[in-house]
Length: 73
Image (cartoon, rainbow, N blue to C red):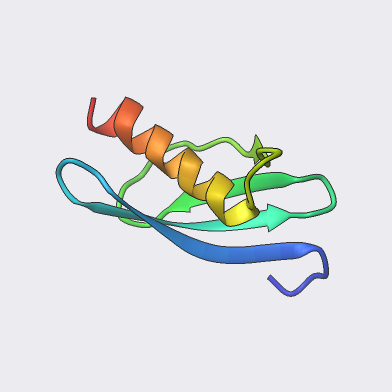
């Protein structure tokens, strides 16, 4: 991402079975975080940035929720 106001990165989370990774993109203009899982496929909607978290922490929160509640449940 090269536009001003946009952030990109990668987050990792250790689940029960393995380590999950996801790339994320965040738009600081509308505070949306979009997650792109890299080692599994899942439909992940964009979420609003959590007020007390950074964009990276919000992406990690989203990945943890996805793994714990939907993939390893």
